[in-house]
Length: 392
Image (cartoon, rainbow, N blue to C red; front, top):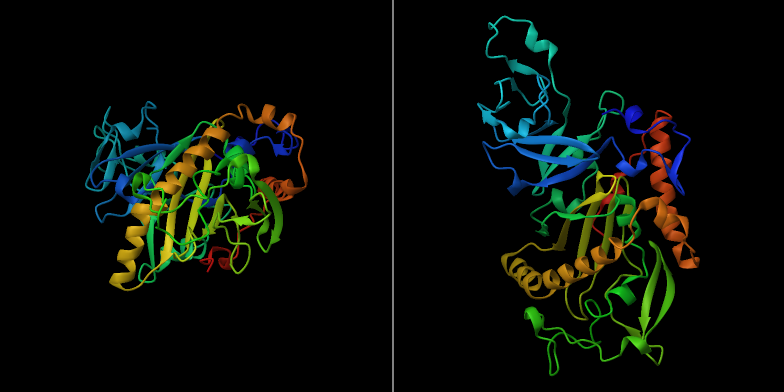
């Protein structure tokens, strides 16, 4: 599907405040982590949908991933219902076979020298495997050549000897992807995650600790009704700080200084470093939130920590299992519950009453809309490699 077809009847039209028609279906011409590596089994096609396009992935004879449109050009059935033979995907209905570039390699009733296969190709997208993810460049590579994946991928995925990475399952939210991005503002956590995220100021453990789910952290004994919020500037935008009744900060773990890179990065990457409790090692949460269609969003998410030796990696695994993983799963569920209450994108934007702390939210919205309009004008903004460095 070309950008021109996706944009709708007029590239000047808006379907919601600040949303040019077509942007609701995502930004094309970028690399996306569309599947986890363990989802793509050898010898089996895997159908999925992103940016409002049905696609199929499979591994070729060398184990490399391929991504093409999930529609046989013969009679329109899904190629993902077919099979993988000799590294190529074959339609289950009549047997047409295609390689990773989308070229038809076989029409079973045609002689070997037939010219017909050259007339029935399938649209293919560049694909690669990196850091435990299957990536695909969804767009028009002939108009917007893809950058090297290594130049636009988070640093920790490029150096498994220096980092340890823990993947979350791919998550699907019933909301538009722009609404999901709105959920990454810098001050909702002190209220929405008032039970799941804050901890007492002393290190993990000790009398009175909350041992639920194997989490040894002590919860702060400050009722939510007595808490207040302070909005503070940081190099990556505004951040909300939770305060107790005496105005003392409650530990949520968010960095307010001393970290590198970007918080929001095109096409849809959000980065947040966190210290789970005083005295514990910090980790970085990364999440890509992108359109499946106009009303569903895929989140590809992981947590990364610096780690080299075996002992350090074992400690990170213990923290993931007992502290970070359980907390993250609860935070994700809380975020999803809120975003899915928004309903229709246009309706949710129509009656907003935004405040001063929402300025970062507005900046991200403009970033996405500007990137969309830039492609219509023939250019494509690509983040600098420095945007993807590990934050600390």
